[in-house]
Image 1 (cartoon, rainbow, N blue to C red):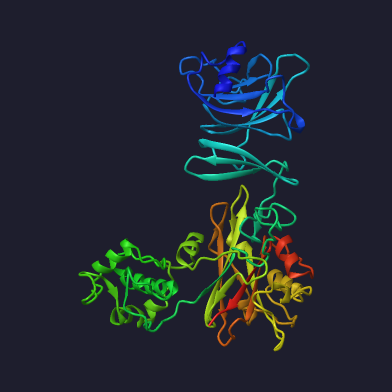
Image 2: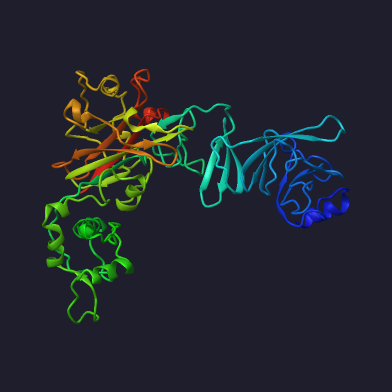
Length: 493
């Protein structure tokens, strides 16, 4: 701000006297990061003037001695709203993106020689909301270029700058930082050095199936005593929530956490108190209280969410946390028992996608070798040959059935054509809502440290949008194909 004040003192036609509030400043460098003018060009955003409609909201300093109105407030293609954020595109110095209280505008500066510069303005609302913009930033990595806009109370939104017409896309992510905007998903972590895992997709989410569970030997539990397993508490909370739901009481949530709120809900629901020498009025879960919730299958087998398909928020909040993990090790672990796998399918585009047009299948790989079998902490020992199932998967997703077989440890998770493929009928996919397909996965009998690799494959569209996977390594499919997501699992007893 001190620099801006000095520039105002040196420049004619400065906006300072007419605009009482400045909102943002952005340096405007020439190509290659070269300073423009002897002092450096810059944009200044203001709120304009409440009583003077001709006072502009965006000004440009030429880097030498003059300030110019950009016409953002008065041009018919501009906007009279106050400016809230500014960013200059380093790859295109003549372009500027301006956030206002009603969205984003793009300005193009034209100037021949020493002539007075002029700006043309266009709204950039295709993909960005008409809402107050808190901040703007341009992200560039290789050929990918994004405008990122922080929108008040609505999160961060992105607009592609490297392509004029972005096709709608339905996809699975390769890893946490992948939005399938590149031909290949980024292969390194954010430090640009550490290799990225290709088998930790956040959209392939295995979890233990909800089933009746005997009272743990570690009971009684209290909030101040460590209990053996957050998943056991989550399972109890889900059963308790199912039991009290008919009364309209929805205070219990299966988070796996025992906080003060859950403690007082237990007290209100008549949970027992610990006997002395425990502190007075210490609420606990004992064997009798556990059995009261868990012996009835209608409650014990209930999912953590209220009913029907979970939402993405349900999976993030009410199931065990999943991490990407590192390249060498299995990304998840499960006990050898009945499990579920939730597959999240995302969609971006101006038009929503009907879930009836989305089909999902799930495969698994378990090393058939008895000796020198795959190791959970050495991903190079897993299936490394081109996968043998692409033709069969194409037929299942396109036509609904296949007669093709394959071996080498691979199999469909479903055992019949009817269970090998699911649609997302009844769901709607758009940038704010993902679709979910849930598969049963039986891991019973698997030995400790067995590696299970799960592969979800998705097809979206009508009759003319057939998927056509070709044989490739599992890593390449995971990183290059938006239809494929992979997650590795270690069996732990």
